[in-house]
Amino acid sequence: MNTEDSFEELGIMQLSDSFFPTGLFATSNGLEFLYQTKKISSQQELFELIKIAINQQVGPADCVAMLNAYESAKNSDFSEIKRIDEIIFALKTIKETRESSLRSGIQMLKCVREFVKDDTLEWFQEEIRKKAAYGSYPIAFALCCNALKIKKDKASLMLLYGYATSVVGAALRLGLIQHFEAQKILHQVKPVITNFIS
Image (tube, rainbow, N blue to C red; front, side, top):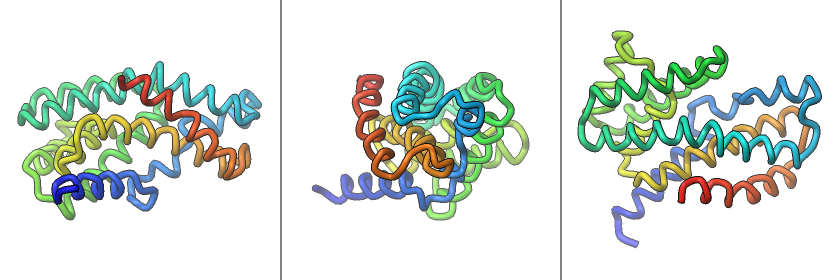
């Protein structure tokens, strides 16, 4: 493995680590409500929820927006980045989901800017500061992956797997599942993610 590949792999590990301070580990993605209203009560139902969300919401919305923002960042197309940010913000119609996306996106951007110097990150942070951009998580994630030279296909895997781990983490905190069940679900979701991306 050459140095460039090693840096990409390390960047993937860093951004994917629950230690990375985006706040995603603390969000339940609506699971808490579903659990409290007894709409989800088993490991299988949790897996089905994650699968449906990846195929019908997170994949077609967040992942597609992230991929387009990534390409726009590579091409320094700032107006297109803002347009994609506006679209994904408008698609998040549930207030809590929208606010969570903004908090996590802005936090990720601030953190990565501390150790990577990148003109696109600087520009986007300034646009957010001026309230000329929202800073939705998929867009900030795309820009950070691009700045860290993480390839687009790997960024897709990270985004979708990150969603799955945040829901599984919420299920653990709620006592809906145990750790071994969590790992089983994460293993089951791998083909869902790869099928969506391929």
